[in-house]
Image: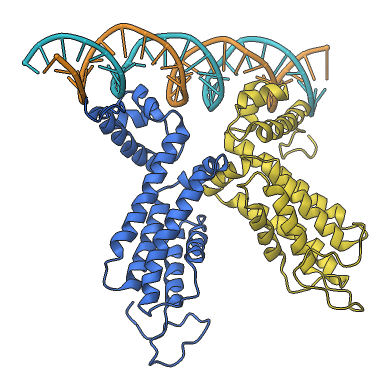
Length: 211
Length: 211
DNA sequence: TTGTTAAACGGAGGGTGCCTCCGTATCTTC
DNA sequence: GAAGATACGGAGGCACCCTCCGTTTAACAA
């Protein structure tokens, strides 16, 4: 009778809950068992029937995408939180480290994503934009505070980040990536103007001994 | 009684033949149907039983690797042939174009390879070395002929090549890659010494109107 | 040639995962 | 509380994976 001529019923509570559960389970199962884990395993872990899984995510790729999107969003939100941190440089550094972890726990997922991205790069565009924005906000703050050079764009930084993660061969890649990122961030720093010029490419940490 | 105490029988002719057939079929099937095509389809196309396929290549990855290796070798041999061409610059250009085609016909294969490479990068090392050598021989010849600048290493060139092929998103990527490679090769050229200095970073094509 | 034997062949079959379909259960709305 | 919409679960049909073994075939010796 009233104003509900647009037929929008409230979505069913169980549907929302189940969708969430499946996503959570998928994240765990894919991260642990690689990207070609059984969907039935995901359903079981989520405590739902296989039919439910398929209703929410008609294809394996759809599920994949949803999981990935959500992780990208989490990384993005992390940036939002870190924006309130005291030290802007440290905030950026921490975000990057989280990014490495993100890549690390994904195991085969990255490769599978490359495959999924091929057909319909909308996902790629989305994540690129989102992460650029995230990294940009952190970068801007550090620049505005006069702690970092201003001639690096968020896109550059993001690409550098991915490039450093792309070692992915040796077992120690994670440590390598972290080291490279540290060096990179050091390189981005504007040396404190009152001090002597910082040595350019060394592992020396200027003043702050402790961290 | 003579010198065949080391028990090496001649390998059976049918075994050799079948192995070859499977490889050929796999190349076609994977290229056409993506990387997760059915192995049974491969066997059928090769005209052998599924058991035969599995005897020769115990896992999907093994088959994959064999196909890939062989293609890398073919690319490598192509370089060998092109070494005898008249114009060394044109030879290099042609090799690169073949490389694009190679990537193009592989469809999902590249992504699948990324996945396969993760566990045991021996294959990666092999192909990298092999392709570097191939590209290097062509490059060296052009440099020796005084037609190209000498400050680009084969590794650089190879990476540039892969980078340009890594566009892989838009439908027109292949054309893009070819264009980029052309520009790149042009950039590598030593300008004919009798001419005026080439403008440095512009899209202007110096003299040659036609191609 | 013919016989012997190691090697390779093919495909049946058991197992697993994919995905659809539909009777049943549950939630929202009135 | 009743009605109707919506979501649930899992049985079942299908495709593919991979192993196993009886049969076939090629290499070698005599």
